[in-house]
Length: 78
Image (cartoon, rainbow, N blue to C red):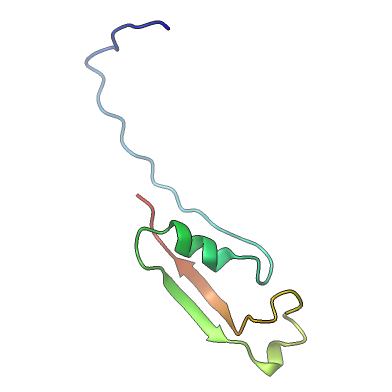
């Protein structure tokens, strides 16, 4: 292992701000991911599934799913 001194006089590096988009199919866990990694209680836009959406939203494999995100989930990581 090599040990040495770091260069002095360099200004501290500012943190980089990022916006991360989580995309995926119906019922794959996007909302769950945001809730798992967010340091704040996520802002969620969940609504009940409707009969009108049944032909569009394939609920096979997620039969227990009764809500869906209608706009976005917002969380924060620092």
